[in-house]
Length: 132
Image 1: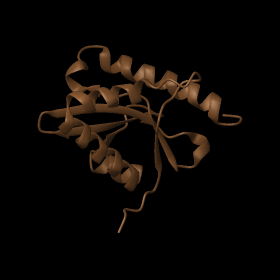
Image 2 (image 1 turned 180 degrees about the vertical axis):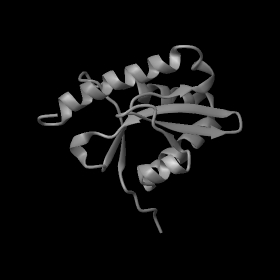
Image 3 (image 1 turned 90 degrees about the vertical axis):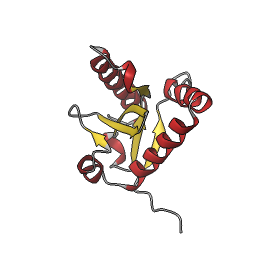
């Protein structure tokens, strides 16, 4: 029996159709097959769990009022994927904004990652939520 999904997961795409997160996930798939499988498994878990359950299980962290971070951690595989839940979709969708190996998040880079995710969130809502 197929799993029941509570929500869809979308990859952020800008107004010109480009998606940095899609490009990064493709790069990871080419260079780190185990990492790619682990990321996909965690995305599937995110689809199946409520955000409250995902927060309790530590699958997800909530570093700010509007952003979440999917934590992909399995042995040497360690990625962080920021995402948001659009206010106009009633919890039926989350949008992933990027995928970064945890080793690349030293110093100010985690804060910069979140600031970029917040900027992308604003852009997505402006383009996709009427009156957003």
